[in-house]
Image (tube, rainbow, N blue to C red; front, side, top):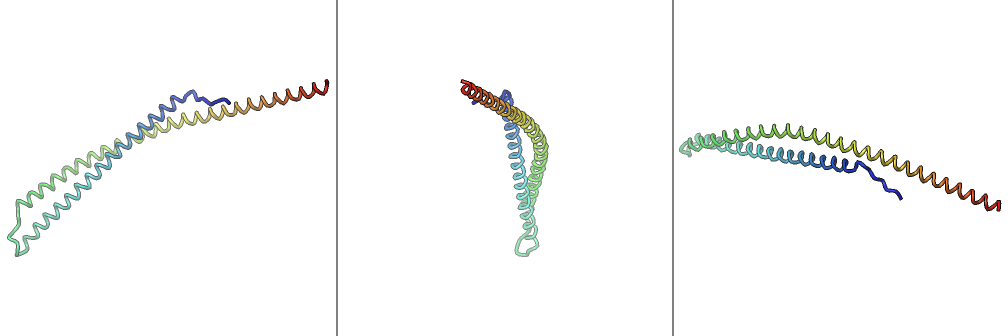
Length: 159
């Protein structure tokens, strides 16, 4: 039996490989996005904790049993909060950059998927044409066998 051979198979394999590379690039960027988002959430949680600590330190001042506010502690906490805010802002800017790179990488992935799919459609069309040709040849051979069998039967009747 004849075997279908797609002469552009190496190109199709190459396009599949390119698509896999683009998928990997998108996945790496998504991992970076997730890492940055988690980092920002961590900064926000730390800032919230520091603000609560400062609030507690300032509210103890109003209680008669406490001697007063530890200004140095409050200043350190405020400084730490400002540092965290700056780090969070840098992470937000980095996240915005990652989002734009993700958008570009997704567009590249879409183009690679379209290129691969175009080759697959061409392969499917060529396979369908090949099957049709195989069926036509088989039908032709069966017709020829039928003619030969009929000719033999006529010869045997004549003899």
